[in-house]
Image (cartoon, rainbow, N blue to C red; front, side, top):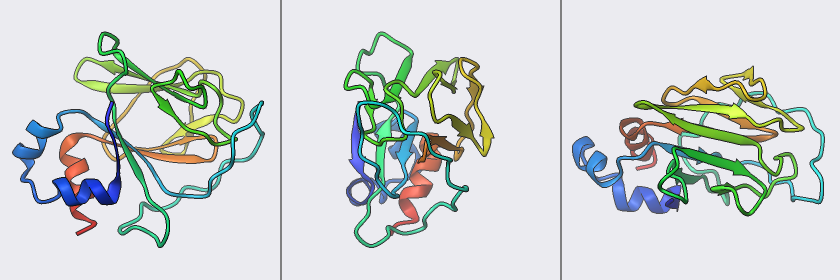
Length: 166
C-alpha cells in the first residue's frame, strides 16, 4: 500500500495525462480529508458525526490530506481494513475511529465498503452504513468513519483532484 501527502503527490503526478496516470497508479484511492484530530485511546469515544463538509479545492493552511492506494498489505486478499488497530491496512489514530472500523472489498471491477460494528458508526454519502452490509462505492463518494472524513476516487477522478491543487 502506498500513501502520500496530497501536496507531494500533486508535485509528482498532476502533470500526467490520464492514460499515463492510470499506468503509473492503477489502484483506486482513499483520501483522508484534513480536519480536526482526536487522539486515540484505550476505548472508542462516543460522538455525533459532524455535518458533511464540501471537499477542499486547495490545501488549508497547516493541514494536509493524506492519500492511500486501496491495495491490501497482503496482496493475496481483495479487502482493505481501516481502523485504529496497527494490524489494519490503513491505520487512523483518531478517538472516534474503532479498532476495526471499515472494511473495503474489491468486488469485480469496483469496491464496496461496510461498517464492521463500530461504536461511532459510519456513513456513505450521508447515509448511515449498517454493520456488515456492504455498499457499492462510486468515485468521489464521501465516507465518514466516526468523525473522520474520507473520499473515494477511481484513478481518473484522483487525477482530477490532483489537478485542482495546481
